Image (cartoon, rainbow, N blue to C red):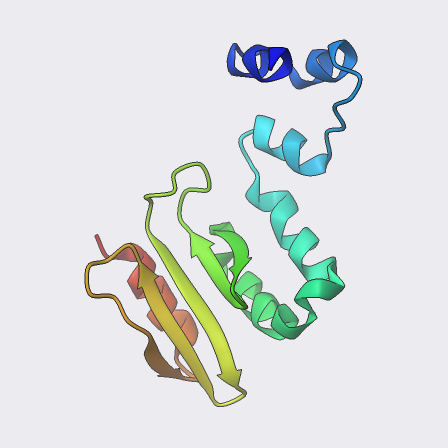
Length: 134
């Protein structure tokens, strides 16, 4: 509890790790402290064998200059892209590759949201538009 209280009070992570020896902070925590958690999240997802099924989709999303700035996670097998990693209420989409010809996309947190089928040629444009909608 003392470690959590110190973290909430803004103790630098390096000092937190020294003071509370049981803590083991990784690259993601450093990226989070620098205000850029997205930079370490993409490589983490793309190197995890657990996410192998999503690798092609992740690579395709990361190749786009706009979508690579979105914070990616994987939720129930679908890739979740979030505009603001630190705000769970920010604009988000889930995208799942059904097969090489079809994707399913859902805007998260939108009343009445449901999965929409998107042809393989259109997912990037569709995702960009969905993430820009208020």
